[in-house]
Length: 318
Image (tube, rainbow, N blue to C red):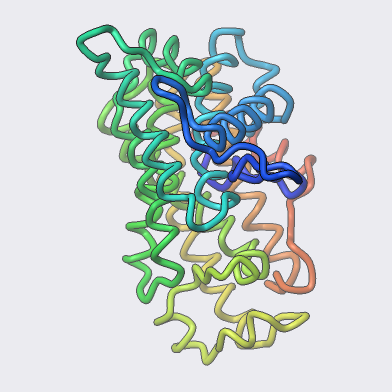
């Protein structure tokens, strides 16, 4: 699961100012209590974790795995909503508050101070039982901080650096949840997660532009003669289609390089990770099937294609 997999086209965070028509809360926290904006955003994120489908087919997994992955989803969604949906002048402060509360989970104070936000409290069983390190969660928060200052990436390597923060940590957390984290698997997982993140960027060119962000590397735009004005058109130009074809092929190579992780896993972990690989392949196939016109409509894979790719990846182990 990538960071953007926690997004929903129809779900928005509440106004992080926490203010009703009459002005309402100022968002200032009482001592020992979370701020009202943080409480509202994380509460909604936790509800989405319980209500929405999850990319690893949560309903097919044992209850322990479902609970742990839902808690991870709630955290990632909270960080995402703080970084994307809160008023711009509140975002960094909210992300700092989330990080501080995460610190209480990993380093309780001398007086035994515990996390204040329910979304962090919900992580405690997963962190304890699965020995999940703090760094992947910190990286997800940092990715959202980076989103506040970086809206363009000049080179593909710069974009890969962003994916190391925004996508790869989730795959590492998932491996810990399944008790399958090893250095070799983490390396392969990083390739899969980066490819998934890139596929989502290529699908969502128009949506990202409306949010003020362009993830297509500047050097690639220049090479193919594509301008940002082209990204705002109602349909993709031949130059943009050629560029996206190039990005899809490059992303598919990354995904194929990481896919052998499936063959190193067994049982539910194998099925879950095969689902990630399948989702990435189906997404890239959907872009190709659209003629790489991601502007006229967002290309989304059909469920039968995802199911077929999942079965293939599970049986082949890659």
